[in-house]
Amino acid sequence: MHVLESELKEFIIDSGLVAKKAIDDAEGEAKRRGQSLGDILVSRGALTEDALRRIQAYVLGIPFVNLKDKRIPIDVLMLIPEPIARTHNIIAFKKQYDLLEVAMLDVNDLASIDSVGKKTGFKILPRLTDTESIRSALLQYQKSLKDEFGDIISSEAGKIRVIANGNTDLSGDDLKKMAEDLPIVRIVDTLLRHAIVQGASDIHIEPMEAEVLVRYRIDGILHDAMTLPKAAAAGIVARIKVLSNLKLDEKRLPQDGRFKMETDADKVSFRVSILPTFFGEKTVMRLLRETGEGFTLEVLGLHGETTERIHHALKQTSGIILISGPTGSGKTTTLYTMLDILNRPDVNISTIEDPIEYQMKRVNQTQVNPQIGFTFANGLRSLVRQDPDIIMVGEIRDSETASLAINAALTGHLVLSTIHTNSAAGAIPRLVDMGVEPFLLASTIRVIVGQRLVRRLYEQKESYTMDAATRAKVANDDEFNTAFQAMKDEKIAKKTDKLDDLTFYRPVPTPDCPDGYKSRIGIHEVLAISPTIREIMLHTSTTDALEAQAKKEGMLTMFEDGLYKAARGITSIEEVLRAVSE
Image (cartoon, one colour):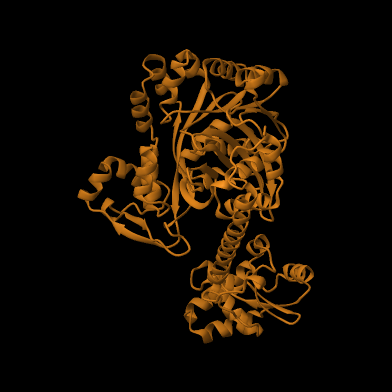
């Protein structure tokens, strides 16, 4: 099904959406470039993609459907699994006898139509729709799954009360039977799948006096997910222990384990930690998505000069690149993104990690095991004998690991690692405290990246401006001006714009996004080691002196980068203040 250019032009003129002169200009450019008139009008902003789709549907005689306010029956919606619907922008919305009507953004996607037809056994009737309709329908998948999971947990939890009979002092054999019992299996499986659907990074299962509280950490914030009867606690922990290959009858000591789970959309690895508490064993599971799309530095939130500094450091054949920040600030993700950039056929990359969070092709990954004496230091000592070009050390925790990392960098290896400090400049005095000589740091460290994670504002957001008095309560004008200058340098703001013209944004709660935030992005500071900073490292190595010089040389601090992203509408001022004060 193809729309003739002459027909398309005629219908665009008839629609009155675009002026005749603009159409003629676009037609000339389309002929010069060998592109469609519609594509040129969309690229110029004269016509939206959805408006173009409606016109094309009208020309082709294909019905156009609006799903924004339409509640799709769950049995129809689920005929096409969510991952397929999301990837190919195809939604099943109506079935009758052997016919299935599907809404699509591209009715010429014959491969998707054929695939859905074979999978469902229905004759497919394609209908054109717009992006808002697709987005609305995709949200219905999540709502439907939440309702489904809630029903499953409610019904299975009722059965648990009968099985446990209030008995909390169960033997290993009893726990094994309970872990294999169908209601417990269903509850745990549902909890895990529910967390994946919600986009959680952690699951907390916390025994209380009279119940079990389940909480999910979503975008860095803990949310209550559900409560379960107290009688379910022993069986749930036992089931997780079985999955993680842990000792069922050990209830007095902490245990750590790991297991994997596959869904239609994701392959997820769960890192398990079990800790004895007053009311029983508390379980925390970290979700590590192994099949997620690869990141880039830009996707992580790096931009402009900061990106250039990192790329320059990654081109070096020796030295140390450090990522600093507290637990949960995305350091490991940034490390893996850098490794992905460096991962070429002509280099040998080896890592020593605790634990291995993401599996990478062509990278030799090793996990430490302190119980048998295999530590970061021991592993790093062995790694340098494996002829690596690039070494990634999960974390520099002690003087021995720091010393070995420095030696590896001095002997011609590029070393990437993380360190727990509050700022990029704070990494230098921290390493000096570990016993590393300042002259060794000055000759090996290439760049230090400090970072935090902030929540992104959802699509619906409220704009506002701040006067000088309001700005003064947030930060001084120098910090605002630095962020504003970065926007001008990257041509996001005009050079003639004033500080009072800066627009900021607040979250707007909606039924689809109750707190007004969705997903997270990094705020960073990138300290590149210049000759002047080397001199400071050799003589004082204080955080304040290093940071002051780095700012003189153009470093955006994390707070200033947060202001930059707030002014771009990516996050809010309140979220930046929350992140940098942690």
